[in-house]
Length: 206
Image (cartoon, rainbow, N blue to C red):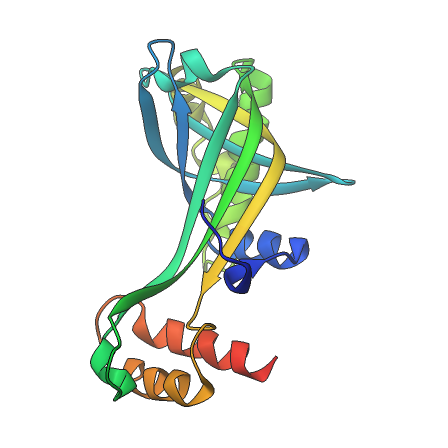
């Protein structure tokens, strides 16, 4: 990912926190025929000491897992984004653009097919994403059904080797322009405009 210096996010803990907040990503890899494959998946962001792992599962008929085991992959976490109209700058010689945040995580893949290990991962996934629900889903209430489904999935444990964070929030513009953009975004209903406006406010305060 191309990241100009002013858009870099180097705070590792901040990147991890953002991945935990937005755990739905795109798993990208090359298959044995040099064709790029992609799967949209929920990821558990799991820290073990100084190591960081991304854990997920996918359907067994999905061919991507067969060519990815033991290889490097890329997971993309797309954050909020919004269109920025050049008219908002209220100045000549300007062009429209797009503000957004994104994280690219590179890592080595381990495919897990052992039923006991997969069960633990599925239960961990459920606990991870069910937090905050008024009546969380419980494995004990659906045990027989879940056990049948385990034969139809494969789990992946990806040890992260590199994290690249990008926050393009008009940092390359003047304070006056950024303030006009924030005001305009707060009145927009498309995309993640209001969220981008809040992120831009945060950047101005730093």
